[in-house]
Length: 71
Image (tube, rainbow, N blue to C red; front, top):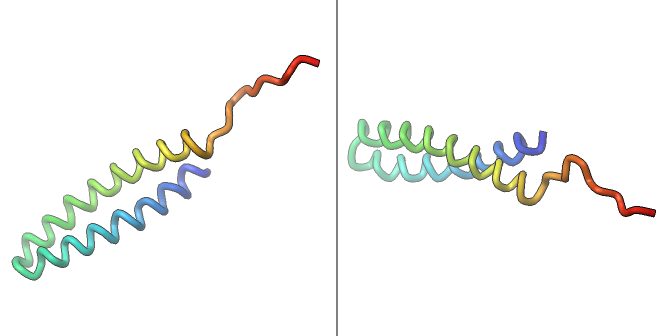
């Protein structure tokens, strides 16, 4: 469940960047702006998933079978 929450956060951030870049490109060419946005949209999903998995494994995951100290 945690990886999905982290993924959504990364998607919002990367898609905001994609919209910004595409809107700048769109000032020069409408069709190029659409193509740039589509490419960045797909790249953002891929990069967001990789980043979400990395963050979750590194900072949020707990060991599956923690060892208890011998008493």
